[in-house]
Image (tube, rainbow, N blue to C red):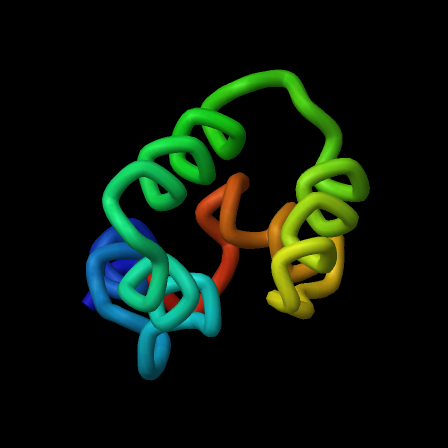
Length: 76
């Protein structure tokens, strides 16, 4: 196997179970889920999103949000 093949295989493989944001999204109602997804796709800072989530009793670290937004979490 070449390095290119190994890298392609690694990027295609899921690295583990879904990250905590998948569970958070599943627990939200449709309107809040849509708002959170829109925030992920915006330029709104992860720290700001984290603080907003905390006001509705959802604790998630800004670093977790950032990893998910960059596609570097276990969701791939």
